[in-house]
Length: 294
Length: 297
Image 1 (cartoon, each protein chain N blue to C red):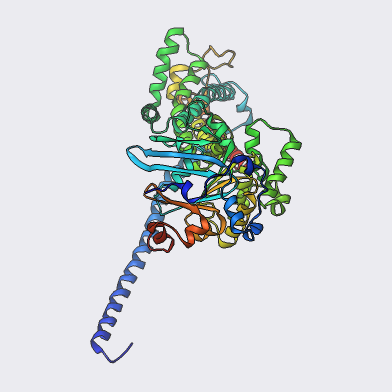
Image 2: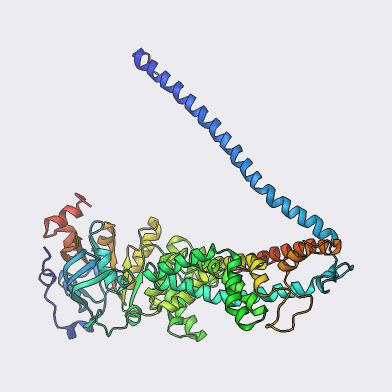
């Protein structure tokens, strides 16, 4: 069922031409011409997902998934529960390794050309490059400050000046600085749900990853907190490649550039978000988008 | 209520009556259960409170502060105390704790963090559960065979090890429980930031489970402090101060056991006082552990 993504997104132009291209902010993107927009959607590939099969024990959860994820764009994975979108997301930083009996049984996933399932790959190094934000906000039972610097301390950074600087930068980056600057040393568990989730984003960007994976980051948040996180996603894509799994199709529509629709462990369609939501080429996608199932 | 259809109307009324009768029965039943549960709780407290009351009355009544630092009296004489037994118990429990806490906590970490659900983990957990039901005298007999019979001497060390064996399963099971209660999403969060498994255990899981682990350790300490049977077989008893780990020592529990069965009033009274002091020690350790646990939160 999966269609060749390279056919739907325009052919990838030479990378050299793309690297220096200034990244547009969200508001600027809205006023771009169609031609500019499509060039933007063809930024260089960061993650190559190539014919990936994935098994939970004897259950095959992913069937021949094949598409590229492009740099500094927001790619949304949508689809009904159990369609494999979270499984695929967790393959990208090998979080599935933690579950016994799971394996990528065919194909490969390459980040910047390196097969991340190759035995020589250091998982810890991989997870530093590919940050993750979870469905349920999971701040550590420590102070706000210690939450943000956790990843840096793991890497052996203990220089106070560097840590202070990273805390401010990351919290500003997660649009949380103004709200917590006076309570950096109080417990992170005292923050509201939305603040906790933004703290988790700050924690992820503190280690300066290249890619941020978000597994339904707003599903436990109220509408106001959701808006804040979505605004944050728009800002973050200037510097990071973002992959977001969401159940909320409006959300995918609002904050992603490219949308991939999964069904029963298969990629049904991937295209520019605008196209998926206005004129999908597959009937199943259209049925799902228009709420006929899922 | 519409009067246009008398049949339906009547049915409604009947159903309503039925409902209210059921509701009233439910309220009565609920009240009765409240009272019953209260009474059962009260009954469970009777033996507990009466033991405490008896020990407090008879123990505190005869208590003199000098008992805490004097040696036990000779048979039939007045005065004296249980200073050597107090020191002995503290040392025995300390040895037991030093042996069982590191092994117990590391075992629990292995069970929950490194091999959850594996065959070896299940086997170890099964053994720990069996060991936790081990009659304490068997721990004493075991150490007697291993250490006392081979070195030909009763010793503090042997007593401490026997207590360590008793404490071990309590600590393993309590720590395992505490670690399992740390939500998995905290571990995931740590691993996703590039932490190794060991870093996650040291920085996230153990601190998060810390207060519960301390409670478990204190429970084990309290149990060990009151054990008599394993000590009789290993550390025996003396009427003198402890001077080496390779000698027998007095302990509170054995002193209580010995003195409570002699025909001299002074010694019997001293057994009561020693019981009282032992209970106070256990109480104080518990209070301290709660304070520590609450502060670390």
